[in-house]
Length: 436
Length: 167
Image: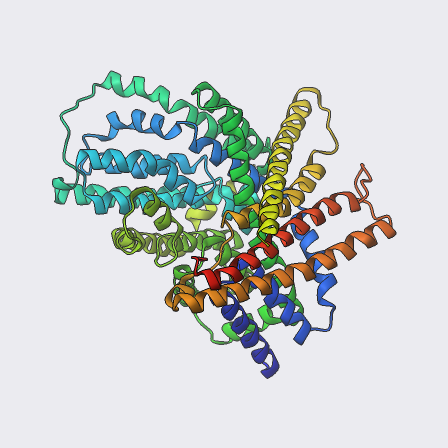
């Protein structure tokens, strides 16, 4: 790397680190670093560039899917969907080793297919399961740990807020990105379930059996409570996969569907819908401030040639593709301890993506890899949003919850390794879409 | 001072309510487009474009409310390790720098809107919407966000004396 580029890169990352540590909001930290970079090292006027970057970043139809999916999550959180899921699944799961602990995995998997966020998935499922598990005398570490792990499926199984942002920034199709998440999501859910069943066989005490018993007719009659969830999944993912709707339209359909569901469940009135809208406005502002700041910083880094220079020097090391992914994985795990998923994706993408594509990886596959890294960041202390959600539900200290989630952290890394060796797991469904 | 802080909070709340209504309208607009396209092969012509303007509007109109509700993400880990008095001073400094920066950004957004009016820039779509209209709504939101940041600066500076919790 040329010497002045090295100085520039160090200065940019140094200021970023300083601003973030001083508690400047992430979005503004990115803005300020971009501003300093352009003023000190660049030749273009910073102010007007910043203004035009803000407008061109936010005025995008694709981003409209973001507040809509957030709104859908807000409605579903209050709709009684998790009670229905719980009721329908109990007769199917209660006799298995590990018992209802599997409920965390199965409910999160199903709910993730209608929710775009890990925190929303964790909160919606956890508000029902954690209290029930306490009543049944289940092992607390496994009940919280499995929820922390399974809740992260919210980002991997479509629809997914992070996937929308990734797809727009990496210029790949949102629909294909969604499809790419399905099989890896099911794989991760399968690995989690296998682990819980294994723990259940080894020590049945973790989930003491109850006296209740259910017949096959109970099981099948209960399925009607799953119907609304499957209808929503079909409406949102089916319409995208079938090519009937853009992701933004599918999101609007999802809002409508969850609204109807909440009305049928008598969980909706003017006050509640307003609460949902206000919640969505707040979360949307939070995410988009980071996206807008990152949009400007990435433009500035492009002007200065930083991503290209870093790509060149990393490729110059002649790492094997697996070594590169291992190295990146280490960096992401470290970042994940300190930052939230959205910040990680938008901050690293301008540098990581060109590097990874140059090393021969598919950008859609890398999206899935990155989302798995974001999932890891959700459960690594001290900053992990799933840990915060579970702390909010139980009052347990963060470090304890992180310890309970540790086995699931390793299972995520295992899944990432499998996915790196067999990229087809992610790419099979999106490729099928192309050939349609 | 406290009147100003209270006023900023009220304005932020009001703008967030406005954003909530805009988000609701965006949803309805897209649903209407889906229905009339699939049933009558007609289009509103504006659904894509105007819902994107809606998004641009609610990001900044909602940002002040999000700030007030402590929704924006920041790293408090390192501040938490410092003595509380030092953390308060740094927080006040960081908030003021952010505020000044937002003021600077607002000024350039204002200039952008002004030149959109002067050059009569339009959207380049079928509607030929003058760009200054959606941009001016964004500018209003950015202004409210700035006012909320000023209020936050006042609050964090006062906290240095009153030893209030700011993180």
